[in-house]
Amino acid sequence: MIDKSYDVIVVGGGPAGGTAAYDLARKGIQVLVLEKERLPRYKVCAGGLTLKTVELLDFDLSSVLEQEIVRGRCTFGGESAVTMDFGEVVGWTVMRDKLDHLILERASVAGAQVLAGHGVTKVEFFADRVEVSSGNRHYSCSTLIGADGANGIVARSAGLRIQRDLAAALEAEIPASGETLENWNRCVQLDFGCVPRGYGWVFPKKDVLSVGVGTFWGKAAHLRSSLQSFLKMLGLASEPRGARARGHLLPLGGKKRVLHYGRALLTGDAAGLAEPLTGEGIYYAVKSAKIAAHTVQQALIGDRPDLSSYTETVNAQIAHDLKYASRLARLLYRFPRTCFHLFVRNPAVQQAVANTIFGRSTFQTLHGELVRTSPRILLSALR
Image 1 (cartoon, rainbow, N blue to C red):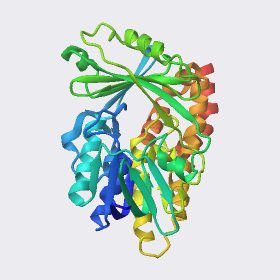
Image 2: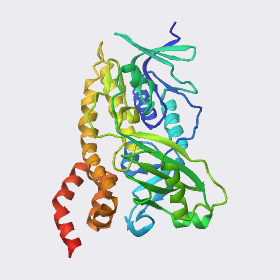
Image 3: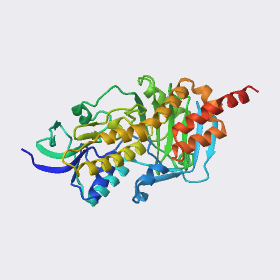
Image 4: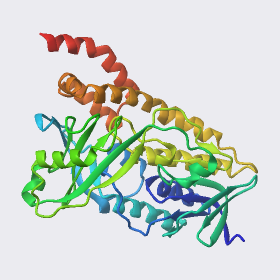
């Protein structure tokens, strides 16, 4: 027996699910969000919020912003440091529990019903509806949005789980002294020599440093030892209070995929849209959610929702560009030392990469520029 019916049910309360619910509820659409965890809940994430992401979220985020970022530092095995001063705020750091909770609060205020601690146990598809079970409660909807992560039930139930490229990451929140925090004040650090086929990062927050390592095309068994070595290299192993490291998977984008089935579609990590070069996921979660909300709004007007335009739009606006990010990532992580010294330390390349990450350019443009200028860079290095 169905307890209640909605226009749309969103499974998952992360940035993708929250954004989709917010956009739809503002249009007067009946939305239910089912989030398996109690809120607010801790989420493993470096917590970088780029300027392009903030521009997509059209409400005040100041209450959850930890630090503004104006500088970036790149190293290789802790050495050969290159610091880039952007001369302006290019992003912020956040704690995901606070960010996700804020977006869901805005969705709730807009009219969405948010049920935390309600994991989805079953999804059934019918010609005229989708039925969703959560414990002993049963709901139906005209359209279902899967925003439930890399291993979500919506993709499995819809037969949309296909072979994916997965990155693996391990991160810890390190409580740090004021002096230690000052070393990374308004500055993120990336190190490309601390982990095979990946990188390590330090993202400063108000009271802690988010420190992690990730591997993009390799085995994850070494991540714990790599993280310990990275912490020691940074001089953080002797901090007075430790923190438990937590791991997560990143489903990388860059391939065109079918992201809809009947009355359901996938967003964010559930759709495999993490950026393959840095692992950035929040921006692509929010962008895909906004595309999803627009598609669903249009589909609800008709008697038989057609969600195929969602797949077409995401593949054109997101997956196509991430294909070029994937190509660059494979080069960087196969030849990290060479790429670091030839490209990462090159001021022109630094600016081009920054423009791409912060939303002023695209990975396709960056890829083209590097292909065009690589011979000149190589010749300069041989002189």
